[in-house]
Image 1: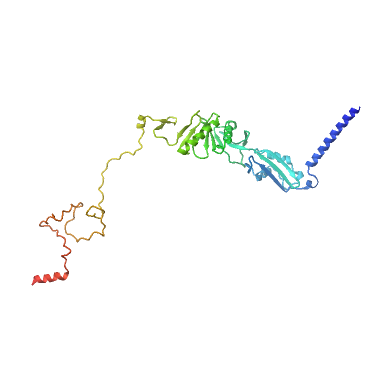
Image 2 (image 1 turned 60 degrees about the horizontal axis):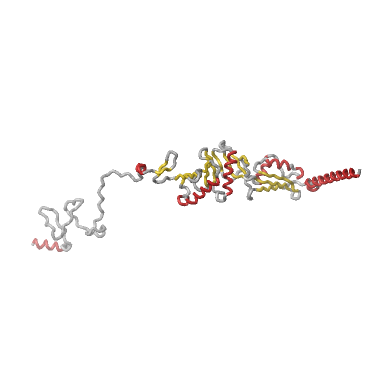
Length: 371
């Protein structure tokens, strides 16, 4: 009997203790006294972004707009009348948050909202034209109007399952290597060539192919880019194909002398006969044409054939009554062997400078002859 009473008393005590704890919990969690009549003066929103920094999607003002759009108004309402579960339910419907918490603070007359964002890695634009954010952990968020963030883009012939498997593994490999963390800005998936990476600097396409050994191919690209690109230039190659085992296949953008392209567009070395058939880059010879004579010099040359004599160095000559000379005069003979002028010619030698006499002397001579 005593044991039964002890057991009964123990059960009653445990139930009383549980009831007491429940009452204490409800008393602490529900505003009482002064807090029951306090109205909400402000809403404090704290958004935790992965890695710190500013929010990637919605700022605090955008969160308030989202609540207002769904009919949830907080400012001016009594704190004990606010439906906190509805606030959390509305914010959980926004797919960019992985944790949502809402509670009231009577001491500051405010509503406190704590949010944690998902971490997006890249944007997918599938073959159907739909866009998604692929987040850490292989999740997906549909892109919607109202929030956006700057991320690498994966597009082309792919769908969401392929983006969250093969492409996700490639992005994770790039993120783990500090050298390639921000190296590429776009991922394109081609139906024939597979995955193609577009660097942020330069226009060379890096063809990764379809096999998922991404780390090995990225290692080959790093060796190639550090050894060849500094000598040839960032844009010297149209593409670099890393899908071949143990080798790197690159296509020169401007072509190489002694090579030609085959039907697939690859460079093939030419033989001696084929090189001879290649069109020459030298200019074709022009047909001979009649050359016009050189124009005569404006000023005569010096007696020794030196530089032309200017007009200031040539003394003026008296006018001559002889006919015009041909365009190409004959060389003058030496002074000693100069022939005498023939009879009947009208040309008269130029008078010497000393033979000139003043006009008065000529008049006296004429008068003497008359006498």
